[in-house]
Image 1 (cartoon, rainbow, N blue to C red):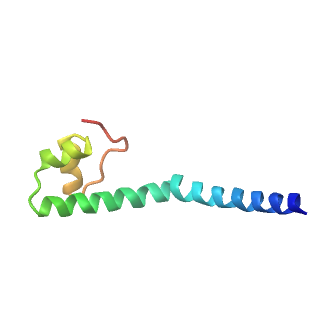
Image 2: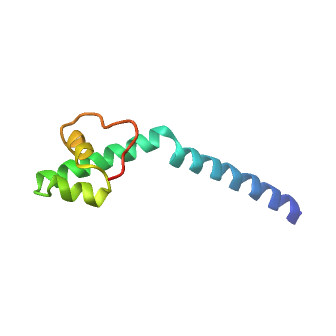
Image 3: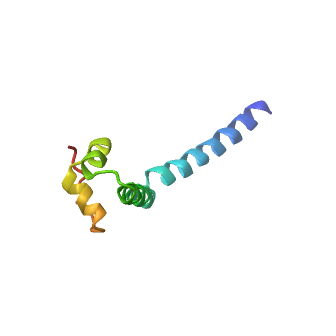
Length: 81
C-alpha cells in the first residue's frame, strides 16, 4: 500500500514540476518578466536615476537602456556592457 501511495505522490510531483517548468521557462513568462523590468527601469529613470547608472546596475549597454526608455523594442539579443 505504501508503494502505491509513493507512486501516486511521485506522479503528482512530476506534474507539478512540469507546470512549474513551463511557467518559469516559457517564452510568455520571460516576456512578462522583461516587461515588468522595463517598467521598473522607466520608473527609476523618471525619478532621476541616470542612464549610465541604470546600464551599470543592469550590466547592459547605455544604448540598450535608451532604447527601452524611448519605448522602442530592444534588440533580440540582450547585450552585456
